Length: 272
Ligand SMILES: C[S@@+](CC[C@H](N)C(=O)[O-])C[C@H]1O[C@@H](n2cnc3c(N)ncnc32)[C@H](O)[C@@H]1O
Image (cartoon, rainbow, N blue to C red):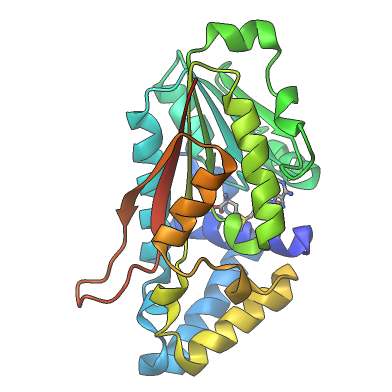
């Protein structure tokens, strides 16, 4: 797995959010992101009608994922949010401004957090917004987020990861989920939300889709197609097997012509 390659894909997403005018997203527009997005537009134009539907609607799908996760987060009324692998997401600053009683922790690998902090130096950050360098795959790493004394004062915690699981082979995904559950156990109730791309929704990828998946695999150093769950039920069963109390599908971006969902946002719950 190449953490630098994975982080580069975050610059692309940041550009999609900036182009859509999301709150605070202008902070994270970069030349690299613009270049990657322009290359993708060229690729889409060159491949035309042979481009599978999920790639033709790539920007809309990424925006759907981001908005669905944000709405879910707000609906859980958390006291504390930890966003894993936040990349250049503007969500944390935006929500911390809107919800002053919330403590929001944006976390990612150190080089991404350093870059994010440098992009935010021109803006006044709310005091309830925090950043922390954190490799989410290190055992017990989430214990470093909040001293126990303060954790007890918070009833509900929510953890979120967006655009990360696709790049993690099953064993690493399991390690990450165990870390999340260990963290949530410190609170009265805890929620974790993430998106999956079920393999049955990818059956339509065709040759152009395969090229795209290969390019993404080369960039990120992981075979993304091999990391997919067979279907949504397999993902729900896998996260419950970790020890979460329950898991459910929050929403899917099912195309209207009846094909399987290409992306599903999932919520796993822990109740103490
Ligand atoms: C595809 S980007 C997604 C970023 C952002 N959430 C988004 O939706 O655009 C994946 C992110 O995962 C981060 N990442 C990769 N491995 C990680 C790890 N072991 N721990 C924490 N973050 C990691 C990368 O640095 C990168 O920012």
